[in-house]
Image 1 (cartoon, rainbow, N blue to C red):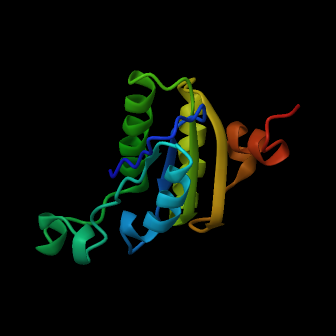
Image 2 (image 1 turned 180 degrees about the vertical axis):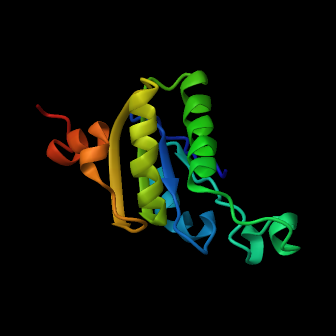
Length: 150
């Protein structure tokens, strides 16, 4: 993860900003930097094992094991959210682009299941498998009231 912060104080919760498939957190660097300029704490975790460039682990490069499963990625991201909350954040915001949007949708449902406070979920051109909203009450609530105003 690359935490970005500014010397400007902000009362906004930290933002987990998740990149999409086949890129690294650097693909979100400009957006992260712009958000951090206002004092926002930005966390941009890298997704490893896409078998390319900087994101490929030694195991992926040697073809000894397959790319990690979605559940593994979600558990890793859940650890990041827990660390943010353990370090003093009262709540977190989640945003993801492309496959990262798919992951933060699942992450928001996991946070809901574990009763971890998520304030906002922002999807930037989300991708990934189709979500069966009838199978996940947290996703259904989010789609019906994304701003939590009801």
